[in-house]
Image (cartoon, rainbow, N blue to C red; front, side, top):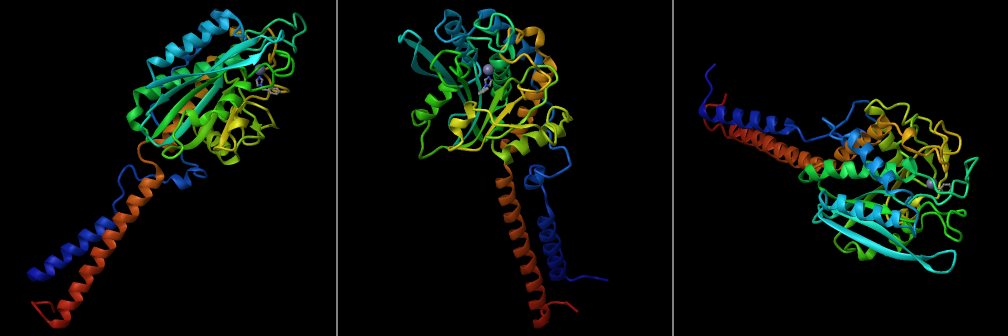
Length: 371
Ligand code: 1BN
Ligand code: ZN
């Protein structure tokens, strides 16, 4: 059958608009489904290097015990700042003091490294870097400090390695990333007499307006890594953490195959950790093991040393966070994609309706050879 020029044009319009309606570009993801999807959403390839993270733990232990008020402590924070200089855009020290046992002031320091400082959303990844002044859970030398390979150094190590990776791919992110290192977390219950848990995080959250612009920047979420490097890693359900954020990170871990480490039914406990001081600002998650009855039983003992660190646990934690950050805050967030999809569909639908309308109009007027 021969088609007239007008009819051909109309058919082309209809085919084109229908095609436009059905286009899905690569970066149109299905993020809403992400929370429930059984499909892996994993960013590949993962670049997190567990050997580099392990090395960061070894370096911290070489400084000695990182107890506030000691030279070892001050040398360690200088090193953290130096490491951050090469993988962030801004390194900021937040200095504060707390009273020591003899009423002299002990100088403490939180450190913040910022990446993508011109983006408006802020993701925070945090850990404490100080180590406990006493080993109250050991059977010997209970008044002596602990090495803190897991309790302190592991979180710092994983974050520094993540910073290296994210710095390399910073243009892929639509968010700022803050790498935040807290001092004076681990001295509660007599660690340093009179101090509470998470003093550094408390001081930082009190001063947070010094570090961001309230009018132009918003906080997205806060991830705390605490004791992420021991063997038999199994994260617990920390009660002060945000449920949705916790479910999403655990789901990401399970999609990577880490079903032991991110169990479906984790042990639930409440821990007064650094994240509690940020709960009123954004969703927070404490990624922490069950240090009371879990399989890694060196918490606040002299055995919290390099021998009881498992590189695989560092990899599980690092790769899960790397993948999670890409999934949720890569260049194309689900919001933008969803909007793009609506626009494409609307333009397509209008074009399609216009084509049909023109066809009917021409047919009614019997213009051309439409039969
Ligand atoms: C986590 C690691 N914490 C200390 N080391 C926090 C904590 C707070 C632990 C209260 C026990 C009780
Ligand atoms: Zn501790």
